[in-house]
Image (cartoon, rainbow, N blue to C red):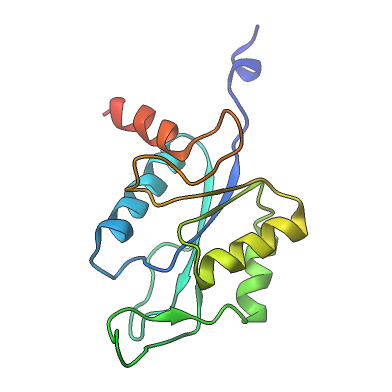
Length: 151
């Protein structure tokens, strides 16, 4: 068996989240860490999150939807997942797995994408003990754990 046949192909993953950098929260920073670990494991990960006014991503694989700031939660913008430009970038990523991190607006958008593409979907927060649901035999936590053990 050659090395090429022993290595598994990279998976194209799109993660939909209500909370991501620059927000300071356990979910945002855990998601950032899991994303780094998955990428270190050879996966392509695209993050889809609300836009934060005045913040520019250094990561080219972050797609931002326009957002509004509700009066009750000014520091927690709500994404409006209706941007054709953002959807084009997401579709061009050709996701093999859609991971939703909340059941709210972004989670619903991710579930719609998965349904349209007939892609497997999993859901849960990167800080949850267990995902809400995942395809049999796959867990983002397993890749992150393997990557963290490598140092």
